[in-house]
Length: 70
Image (cartoon, rainbow, N blue to C red):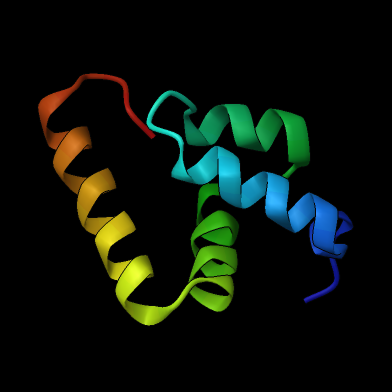
């Protein structure tokens, strides 16, 4: 998967943004050009399996509670 966010610094920045509870997927898409599905794929590839599952569970739980979240 070749994408502008493939270098290590940008991957780290996208991961930090995705892990933040205050940044929406739309903001990541605007700043890095990655769609939500691409962010999820990057997170799955870069995080440990348990960390990825915990992140997805947190995103899902918060999105159920808030009108605007990731």
